[in-house]
Length: 91
Image 1 (cartoon, rainbow, N blue to C red):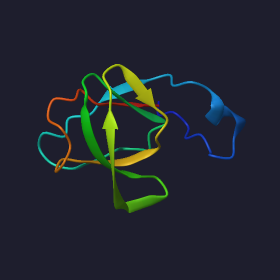
Image 2: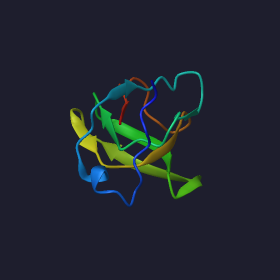
Image 3: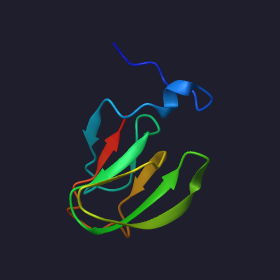
Image 4: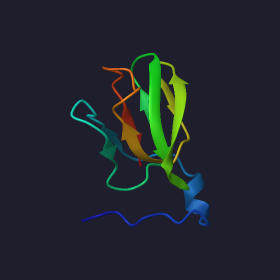
């Protein structure tokens, strides 16, 4: 059964993540099946992504190992993203 999407206008959006899904971007850009509630990394590096409200604009951020970020990610870009970051989407 697929989970219901949580509206950005819902109080439920304030709740923590209930699922983590590994992101394999080694083969190219990865559009996420649904916009994530957050993004985490298992290693230090740089991630290039597009966000929910600007799915055609690349955003580059430095990430630290073991840190979760409250970014509503639309797509992870292969080009410019550090290899072997161990990225995971939070839902």
